[in-house]
Structures are given as structure tokens and as C-alpha cells.
Image 1 (cartoon, rainbow, N blue to C red):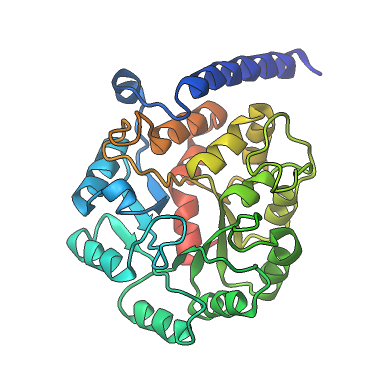
Image 2: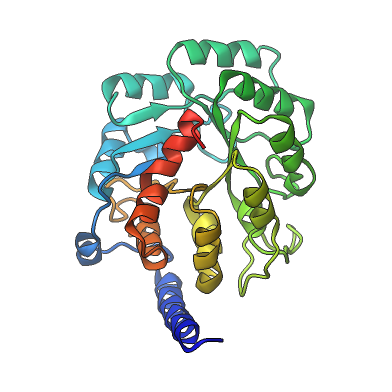
Length: 320
């Protein structure tokens, strides 16, 4: 190992230890002074935001965006209420009409219903720009899931999928089925999110009944590296605790991961707080914490702008 690389690794280990110490007290803390000191991106497109987390209003959501420097956001409904968030596509469209320059509306509807494709086509006509968050208790290989992905391919849309390989999880079977869809449907942009997606950053993935949040050093050769390297229509949404924990468990590896996939890493927060400093969320703000992480691991301003903004735009518009 070269002296430069060794020094960098020591620095990252120290930074990770410091972050871990903070995390034990408060996993994604954003106190007032730190939040003010954080330089805001020139432009920030959050690829994963809901409106009514913890009864947050549309106005509170815009306040969160203002305080975190978020220029625009993909606002994702969850019509089935699975995962304890219920947000109608109509509510997202209403918010879009109030804040057209800030909100990019996605749609979501229960894919177990026989009229799902007709509903999605109607949302397309009403101005929605993609599907998400796709989150029902179905296996990824279910034909109803494939039908929705195929429709996104036809509409030239992105789809944000929540991957969670637990008994009561969502879109189980990522390792068996995701590559098939990426290979079969070239126009759709699949935006991966949640526990099982990020567990696969490592080649060593524990059984989901053991943990959905692996810790410790990452083993090279993971499924994410392979799929992101082979398929430009796959994007990685770093939002929520699942993304943050995965990306901070081995920051030396993560820095290389960002270097290998500079056009497919999407900034997303999935943050429920109202003010960018953790109001109503025990002092935690995913957006602020993830912004710090990116600034720590991506020194190049052009690549940082890609992660903060351009990559999400590519996923939205299909300009990979």
C-alpha cells in the first residue's frame, strides 16, 4: 500500500470512527451550528421524498427543501400505506400544481389491482414523471411487477423500487430477478432503494432473517458493483438509514464505489423532518447527513454536482 493510500485510509478510518460515535448518540444528527456550516450544493435534486412523513404538510416539505438547499425533489406517493406511510398520487399532483418549480411528481398505485396499468397511464397524462415508491408485499419475479416495469419501459420512465428480502418485505428476490429486467427492458431506469439493495454493496450478504443492516468491512465483488457496471439503466438511491448505513460502514470502499459509478449515484434523502435540523425526528436529518458524506468522499466538484443533481436528471429524462 502506498504512503498516500495508507494515509487516506487512516483518515477515512478516523472519520468513520468519529461518525460512528455520533451515530451511537444520534444516527443522522444535524444540530443547528453544523447545519449552518454545511455548504449547500449549487443545485440539489432529491430523488426520494414523501410529503406526509410524520404528518408533515406540503408547506413543511417545502420548508425542509429550503433549509437543506434542495432545489427540486422527486415526490413519491405510497398509495397502499404499506410501510406505514399513506400518500395518494392525487395529493402529490396537487402539491405539484402548488409548487411546479420544486416538485417532480411520481405516481404509485396498487399493482395487485386489475386496472393498475390504466391508472398509471392516466397519471402519465396528468403529468407524473415516473413510478415510485414501488412497495407492495410481492416477490420481484411476480408477473404483475414485471408488467409495471414493462409499462415504464414503454413510457420511457424511471421506477423507484424498494428491495427488502424479509418474510414480510417488498420485491423480494433482487439477486434472482433484477438483472433479467435490466437486460430485457433497456429504456426503463430502475432506481434501487432500501435494505436489500444496499446490503448487496458487499459480496457477503447475510440472510435477511439475521439482519437487513449488515455492518463491518465490505467484501469486494458485490452484486451492486456488477449490475451498475453492466447496466447504465440501473441507479442507486442512497436515501434513508439503509443507504447511509451501507455507505458509511466502510468509507474507503465507498469512495472507490463512487469513483466506479460516477453517473449512477443519486442523492436521495427519504427524510421525514420538517426543517433540515431534525424537528419532529429526534434531531435527525437524512439530507444533511448524506450531504456531509458526499462532500467527505467525493472531492471533485464536477462529480459532486453529478451526484447532487445531474444523475437524477439523467434518470428522470433517460439521458444516461
